[in-house]
Length: 184
Image 1 (cartoon, rainbow, N blue to C red):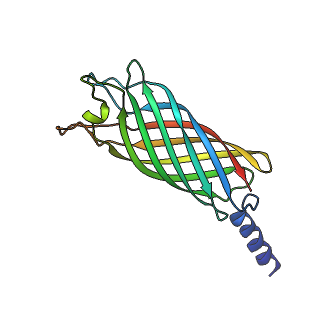
Image 2 (cartoon, rainbow, N blue to C red):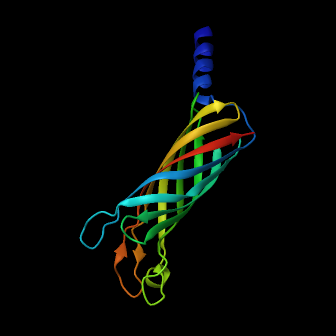
Image 3 (cartoon, rainbow, N blue to C red):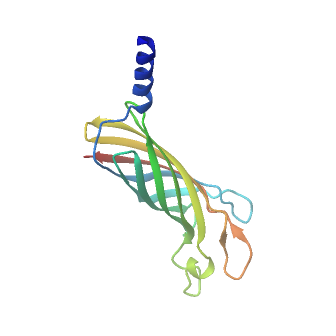
């Protein structure tokens, strides 16, 4: 009987272990690297030339959180940027020592450029397309109330259409980011 009680206690301690008990966690991050799955008319993959934007997240005490991402990545050797806006739902796994998060998001993708001729922008030539993403983040505590985290996002968006045509473009890719979370 003692073995059963000890086994149940040990198993439940491992399975139900959580990071320190905080009421809420707020996080902010920025993209640091990006890649595209999109290709130009010659079949060459677009190359990323810097990203800007932010990742925001708010987590409730039971590990479930909501987030928003908004970022733009410049296409190398052009004035075009590819913009993504995503709304996320994520869960922090009850893993000791580190903060491991898995999440899913949905939103939209579009080309963002100032002028493509005749005073028109990309919005005059392309419709926004829907996008989905999955992501993961791993955080390391630096002091009890803060942790620094690295994230990886994989975005799928294959339905950005040129206005007046049926051709669909793939604006998906990956984004790697870094951020900080404040737990209170």
